[in-house]
Length: 332
Image 1: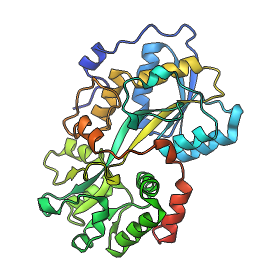
Image 2 (image 1 turned 120 degrees about the vertical axis):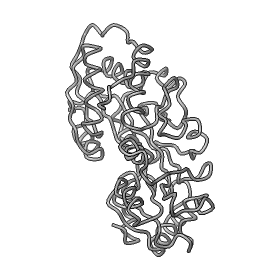
Image 3 (image 1 turned 120 degrees about the horizontal axis):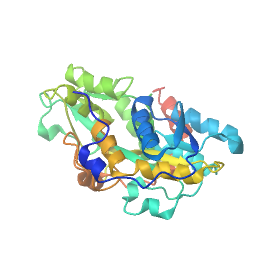
């Protein structure tokens, strides 16, 4: 059955104020895919009368483009796929400061220390596993446990995947370069199986190629939505473990924009109950605000906040250092 954009309950509880009188046209640089962004953009245009021109592209490439364009950029908004890109363009001085009330009531894992971008939705790293081939006592307490002999040849990973690389950046920040290198080398020497992305790992577990996979939380629910008997489950590591990293898709106003009031209106729209309901119901990501109906295919949001490690998302911008490390240990 085709999903609607918003539930009736969400719409009823999130009617927006009257459209801005200027009804300007906004230009959005989106590192998020068109299938995720277009429905929410169309609804925003309908509800506010503000038109939005979207330039889709790779998150990192659009961040570089913003830096190259500088004050000449036509972009009013930047919607990045991960916190690292948001931190990079923030440090480059390309973003406008957001109104303080944008952050009111948001958990700290969804906010920026710099005050010039905010999470629109969240996603967690988890360990996916086969309930048929994995005993309960085999579920690892920490991602660092996976280098032990009992997991040899049984674990999948995707070193070329952007979300994995953000996770490695966080590990470098939390545990240092040396321990991160040791973990990567330990996984490599323990015959971790390389996949091209998250979804192929989940499928690989179902097909018996591996017993465990290091993935983002939303891939398995997409499989379960099509087949509730799909033979894979997922779990968090122990509370605070870096394996539970919560990354975000962030949204920001470009400092050179001539339409900053309307751009802020777009950000407020993404944080409205209706939009947040869309992200969790249709995209299987975590809402960043309260008052959203829990997606039954996701771990409870309060549980997510309990297990998430405390990481300053603005510090995840050193992708180049992570790529160099992955090259050094032969994974790229």
